[in-house]
Length: 610
Image (cartoon, rainbow, N blue to C red; front, side):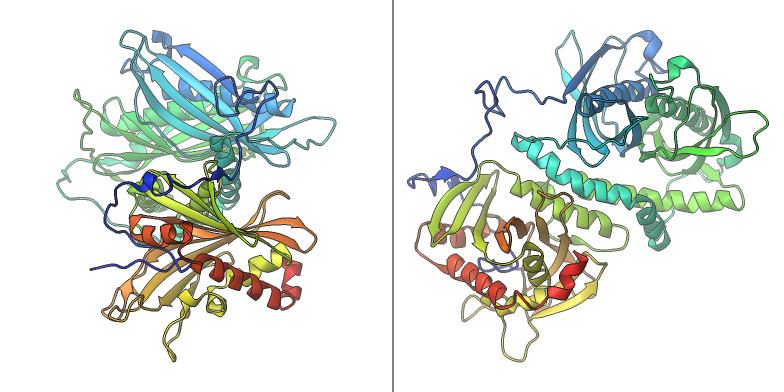
């Protein structure tokens, strides 16, 4: 189906033919960068040689035989201990006081590490909140003989600062490089997901369709789930704890990996390899002297992978009848042959009752995990413009929608291309994308501007590209997903006399500021819905990343910025405006300003909730 690009401040753009020489479009124009790179106290550039994040901690470990498993590869349990220690040191460097592990996000292990290789772990604080902080970790391996290096995994951990005699209020991090600004901005969105994690998974499991993958499998090999059960007890001793007497989170994770590996081995009767861990969430502390009971069982076995569930309970004295729930996690294992190819696994027969529930939930989690890994980890240039919307991926599409816009905002290579009456147009050339953003100051409160522009049904009042023929509904609210996410069907007029009008299915995700310096955000991207398929009446347009940010600059003064990431199919509109041959961007943005001024008193009662 042929596609056509949308107009400048309309819903977005479409994919067009590859156009060569994008970099030469602005080569003859004099321009300057929108933001200068921060300089260090010694005058060095923030992203140049000589700068190092003040919270960064590095650990390098030579893998010895005592660190390995049955396959002579580094034990994931040992790696988790090193990761936790490095991340904790980074957190304490920022906090200036003891810190404890609160959670570890999903981890995907891309490579194994052999004896004699070196593990390099780098950790730094991405962002601090009230008393918690997000620490980003990258693990690489290095072969000293060949000098080859590989990325093993990336991880995100949350640590909580703890002082016994006073409440901790962490100082904010000061991002300086583009990477640090990006991680700082997106950390707020990840924190939002962690706080909603339990409810999100519960809702997704309830609405997730499960399909069995029994094709090409030997159904004569069925292993009872109870035969994979493992129970182990560990006594927490001083070497397992920090200077405050709390058990190291990495030690608990290592013990969990140990019992999970035993359970997986009982199913496959081989040496399994751990490929992924779903979030570790520490529900409570444990101390020296605690007894930790670790239980593991294979919840489900798929064609080439299995899920093992692990839980940890703690008690202090043998006479105690109530045990404290410390942690739970789900680990995905595979079995590799001599050529590192995954082998087929036997089927598993779940236990009646809770075992059947865990069996069904493991199938649902597998689908969710695949959707989430694709949506969250996929590069924008590798993603289709419109991805399917369904209950199993809506949370992660919303996350990706907002995060993509925040990453675009954090770029430090924006170039000021034109300025007319204090309305600025910036451009950014990055890979195959050409992005632009418009910026102006408006005498309206930031929260009010956010509310007025959040509802796309009001956009035709100021944006002519959202208008269509008389009698035709311009913007239809298709689904109010939740308080922050809405799906709209947008109709845009034809760009020429012989063309059909365009339509868009737009996910609008809005976010309020996490901290005082954060902007209000409205992020827009295309999705597909089975109820709104492409028709002959319209050309289906698509947008990957666009939206608004609102910064409070003072009392009743707001900086309003609109962003749009365009492929070459949208290039002619951008270059025409940048070259000064058209004032269409300027006129549309000034109409937006007038709309905000005319309606700045309409939503005053609604501001009480922001």
